[in-house]
Length: 513
Image (tube, rainbow, N blue to C red; front, side, top):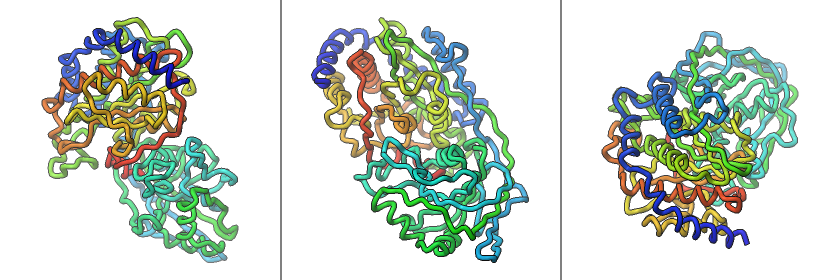
């Protein structure tokens, strides 16, 4: 019955909206991309003054379109990122077990992460698996264990990462694998520090990451250190466990294996990490509707600046990486759709437009928004994410998040031929780690539009001249039509915990797993 209603609305709406949706202007779209990729914005690196300039430009365009700030005051939602971290001299890690104390060596046996808090803590240890609480997948490493006042030992990555049939994203890492997400979750459960160990059963290598002084998450308020697995092997054995076997059991059963380690084990931690932080901004505007609920349309506007650690052209680090497709193309799309809806009769459901900062550092802006929403997150009926939509080849667009039998899939099936686009809804080729995953973790249905990686990805050659304007405008018209359908009273989709498979779009997200 739901399918029939949505298809009926779709047929009616597309007939009425064709002329109106044609008003999305290709010249204005490419002008936005030119502005965001201008040399004066220097690649829009997180924490840079140039990213702030881009935020002010987006806010100005929202205001010119007649949209209001979502909080009634400002279009800018601030959150902190660390722009520089320094490893101090007082970093120490030791433990006592059965009356014997072991002093671990910095670099060889442990290393704080650049965003770790500075503190001295002492306590017993609880193993909490991957440190993930994911209600959308029915998985919680903290279920049945109390870690309040304890140091938690967490595995790298996430369960079943090589299983394409996993309820998780299979070979694509979700938001839950991000280090910052694990840190916030551990703190929320009352942990006093985190020890992070490589999931050696899946990856073999036990190399610790080097300390890096580069832009990243802000201080989460809890010490966060890597530890070599050779010590974890000893701790597990003392309690009658085998570290590798426990990892394999979690992956085989997708059931947590969390427990308190030996009461004879006590760990002493001292971290000494100095941070220089500054605010960056999500840019948020709202078009109210007549009924409760809203649709979120978003894209990230940050990029790599001069390349730094994420450039795929290391010989060009120091050169501006303009990020025309990644992701000025998506932000310009958000602005185009915002202008379209602000100049036409408002849909029944409101639309929230968000340009996210900090995506390239690990989905920081979207994660901050869902944890500090300006409108109730449980009233978000759908999140549409556009990331790298400007290089359509052979009419093909990958769309993630529309499972078989869903109303969204029916609408997309109808809209693809109308705009002469081949929508790949299979989820077999969708690339996952982008801002929609933050919303999906809060059980918000999501659609992710993406036109594929290319040879200019994360390189200085990702310039505005290579944007395929005509085909991208057709895609934006399709998304506008889709939004109007889903904004009707009968258009609200149900969250299905849909899975996306494929390779990770953002290669650099592996840095923070």
